[in-house]
Picture 1: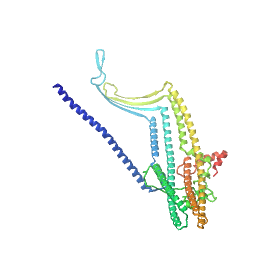
Picture 2: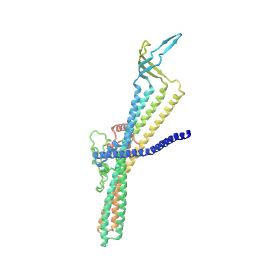
Picture 3: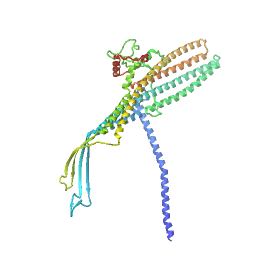
Picture 4: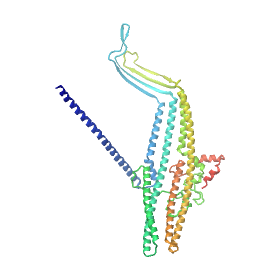
Length: 547
C-alpha cells in the first residue's frame, strides 16, 4: 500500500513538470513571432516616416528641384551632418563638464542613527553613557579648488576639442555640398541623355519610315533601310541603358538628400558654363547650355576690354567664376591654408599635444583645495552640537613608480607626432589644390574642344545634307554625318557638365562652399604683403597661372 501511494504522489508531479516544459517550449516558439511582428511594425513605421518627410519636402520646394534647393535639402537632412552636429554638441558638453573644475563643490549629508542599546563605556567599576541612543546629524561642506593645474589643462584640451568638432562639422557641410552637387549634375546629365536618346530614336524612326517608302518606290537602296533599322535597334538599346543609368543616378541623389528612393523628382537645368567660356567658346544654340550672364566686376575680356569693377575694389577680388584663372596659384594655395578646416584642425591637435605635455608635467605639482562647512547634531552629550569647519588641503605625489616620468616622455613623442601630422595635412591640402586646378584647366580645355567639334560637326552635317539633296552623295554619307553630329553634341554636353563638376571640386579644394568663387580679403592681403617684400613665384608656377 505504501508503494502504491508513492506512485500516486509522483505521477502528479511528473505531469505538472511535463506541463511546465510544454508551456516553456510553446513560449520559446512564440517569442520569434513576436519579434518578427515588432520588426515588421518598425519597418512599416520607418517607411511611412520617410515617405511623409519626403512629401513634406516636395510640398515645400516643389517636384522640380534646382541645384540650390538640393543643397538646402542636403544641409537640412544629411545623416552625416546630423551625426557631426551631435558630436559638436557632445564636445560642447565635455567642455562644460571640464569647466566644473573651476567651480566649488557642495556636499550635504543628512543622517539618522539608532542603536538597540545606549552606547555605554566602562571606566573601572563605573559605567557611563557617552552618547544618545538615537542621533540625527547634518553637515554641509564646500570644496573650492585653489591650485589644480592638471584639471585646468584638461579644460584647455576640452575647449580645443570643441573647436575641432565645429571645424569637422564645417568640413562635413562642405563635403555634403560637394557630394550633392556632383550627384545633381550627374543625374541632370543622365536625364538630359535620356531626352536626347528619345529625340534621336524618334528622328531615326521617322527617317526609317521615309526611306522605306522611298525604297518601295525604287528611290532608295535596301542597304539604306538595313542601316536605319540597325540604328533603330542601337537607339532602343541606348535609350534603355540611359534610363537605367538615369534612375541609378537619381537614386544616388535621393540618398544624399535622405529622401524616399522612389520619389518622383524632376531636376531643373543647372548652370553649366561660366561667363568667360560662354563668350569665348562660341557655343552653338543647338547645345542648349544654360550660360550665366557676366556678373558686375567680371573679367576684363568679358567686359570688352574695360574694367567694370567698382572703384576701390581689390584687383584680384573677382566675384565671378573665372577667378580661378585670373588669380595666381600662390594666392589659392594660401587661401586653402587659411580656409580649409583640416589645417586648423591639425593646428589645434598640435596645440592639444603641447597641453598634454604640460599636463604630464603638472603631475609633479601639488593639488590644493580649500574647504569650509558646518556640522550639526542632536547628540545631547556634546557641549557644542553645532560648529564650523574650514581649512586647506594639499596633495602631492612623491613617487609613483616612474609613471609620471614615462608620461612626460610619451607626451613629448605625441607632440612630435601631432606636428608631423600637421605638416602632412598642409602638404595634402596644397597637393589637392594644385591637382584640382589642373583638373579644372583640363576640363575647360576639353569643353572648348568639344564645343568647337560640335560646331564643326553641325556645319559638316548641313553641308552633306545639302549635297545629298543635290544627289551628289549617297544617303549613307548623310547618315554618317548625322551620327557624328549627334555624338559631338552629346560629347559637348558631357564636357560642359564635367567642367561644372570640376569647378565645384576646385571650390571644395580651396575650402569654399556654394558662395562665389573668389579669394578672401585676408588671404589676398597676406599674399600681396608677401609679394611686396620681393618674393616671387617660381617660373613653373607662373606657367600654371597662364590660362
